[in-house]
Length: 195
Image (cartoon, rainbow, N blue to C red; front, side, top):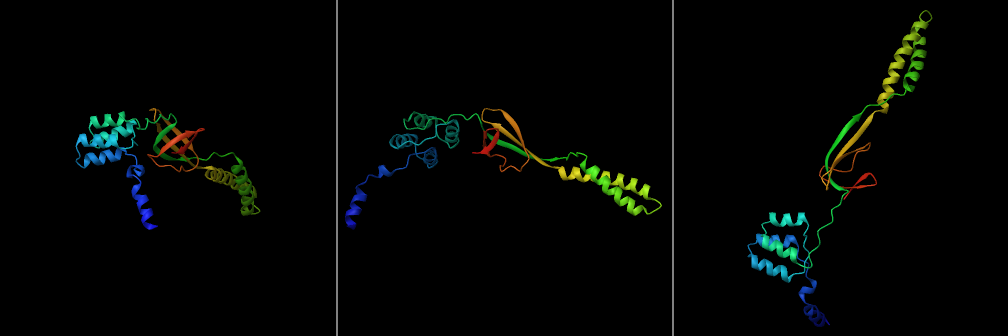
């Protein structure tokens, strides 16, 4: 039984389980010192899994691959077509945290004034109740106003994005973004989502 299984495994051609050749494979062959004719012959014999997008071709050139080899890769029937440009895709260029000052509505001043007036009246004693009330109300109103502003303050985050079409936009959100500078994003229904 064991010898039958071994015979069947050896009968399967190795090409049937071969992995498609990629741009990285070509760069590896060139850097390994193989000649141009040998690399082209290997490209012609292999199943193609090449990236012929502009980024893929630039990576080949930067890897030391000659124009003749690159043109052979482009000419392969099995080469993957260049990816369609995504008009809503881009790269995060900057993230900036901004302190957002609070806006007072007056409720804090009124509440602080009332509380300060009551305390001022108590502390002023019997002979200075009116003065204590006025001073307490004024001080309480100022303190209440400041406390309300502080309670309503917060942070906003500006996210700069450069889109693949060359345009740039800045997006503002109140929560800390789950993105980093350099992250690839897509604009979906007005919100940035990671790619």
